[in-house]
Length: 246
Image 1 (cartoon, rainbow, N blue to C red):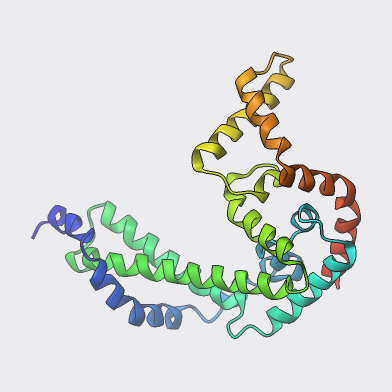
Image 2 (cartoon, one colour):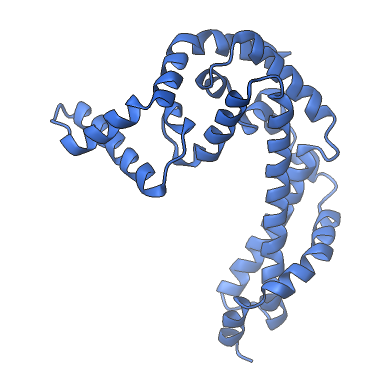
């Protein structure tokens, strides 16, 4: 079979990839260099970094209306939860890094035309292993967030989860407290860009886009998050800095 034919067949190898993933996952973990975990230790695993990675930065806490006392409690609970993880975040990072290196190396080789038929057929398992590793890490961070925020209200916890799921849109955090369709996010992004560029060049903003932005800002959840940020962020940041430095 030619490499081209085999490449086409990769798309239909899902079942085989799932079967192969378990032993491959173990081999990837075992193959990690002895110093891999130590190599990624440092800022990524400090308490401030873990809080940020778990979606518990001061800005997010302020947006959901947390108090300074709640912020200290959240950070303290996060530290305790992290200490009790069955598999440390550092180990999950190391496994995900190893899986990504293996996947990327195989991908480059196959794309260059130098991959053997065996390597091409084994590629879906490498992708599955990477997905599994990244999912395990994401689940651990979500578990840390859940444990750390157990003392917050249900509404606050829900809003933090919503903010975290919407971070990929990279917008001011008050807009992240509600769910939107992809089309609505794109429209809001365009409206924010239009406002920023118009202000920079002292030009008249697009009326339709400004109406979109005004409607978004008028949403009661967005408005509440914005008000809380303006009122409480400075004190919460100070409380967060103090708690995470300990």
